[in-house]
Each structure stands twice: as structure tokens, then as C-alpha cells.
Image (tube, rainbow, N blue to C red; front, side, top):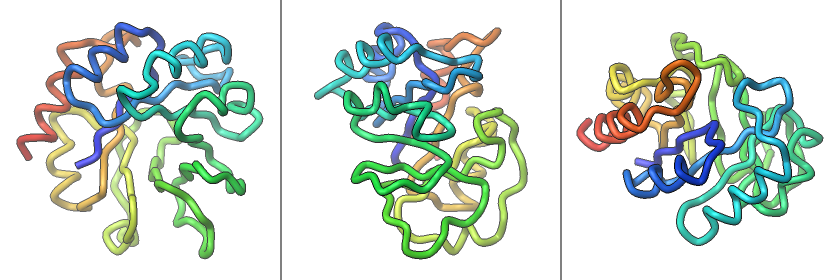
Length: 178
């Protein structure tokens, strides 16, 4: 099971994600996010992660991530763009014929709100990653129900808006023991 932790903003958080066995980290460069990371700092985080863990730069549109995109392994956005490393995020079924590396289903569009999943998700093939309000208490039920390629967590491993290492460890442990 592929497991990504998103919204990281420090090298210490990246190191913990590596230590705990996460497959990927996400850094948000969308200016309106409470997890916003300025592009110059995001590039430093990507450089720190390089060769140790896969890195995703995350925004709503390509304009949000463009300044930092070359430093990251993947570009996760909520719009279709002809990128070799595109991770398409959406709350609707992806359009036919779109080439992407992963599809992140997130009905909350980064809001961390857990909601029922549409039936069509159970039929998706390829690299489906489920996000949106996941935490150590609900992730196993989601994995059993949807059977995605992976899961993505952000607010579910935070206390008072800050990544909590105990919660990060608890989340990945829950996934590994499903």
C-alpha cells in the first residue's frame, strides 16, 4: 500500500516520514492553504527529500506550483496539464484519455473533510490514491471498501494545525496492519 503524508513544511517532518516508512511526502505551494510553503523553501524541502522519499508539490493549479515544480518528483494539481509527472487530483471521475501517474480522489479539495465515497471509485483501475479526512481510525475501513493503490493523509496527522509525530506513526501503523 502506497502511503503519502502531505502538508509537510520542515526537514524534520520529512525525516520522520522516512523513518516511519511513508512512500511519499507532499509540500503545498498553494498560497491560500494553511499549510502553504513558499516556493523557495519548498525547493529546499524537495532537495532534502531527493533520493530518500518521493516528493509531490501540491497546488490547485499549475500556476500555484510552477516555481517549485522542477525540484519535485511529481506535480499534484486539480487541473489537467500535459506533464510527464502529473498527479491529477479531483473530486470527480478523471476525464478519459488523460495521462497521469497517480489519481488522487479528494472530495474535500484539501479541506480534510471525510465524506462518503462515490461508487465509481470502486471500479477505478490504476494508481488511485484516496485522500480527504483520513486518520488512523478510519483508514482501514476505507482501504477495505475502496481497495485503492494508496492513501494520502494531512490533517489526520495534525494537532492544532501542526504535524504530530505520534499521529504520523499511528497512521502508518494503522495502514500497515489493515
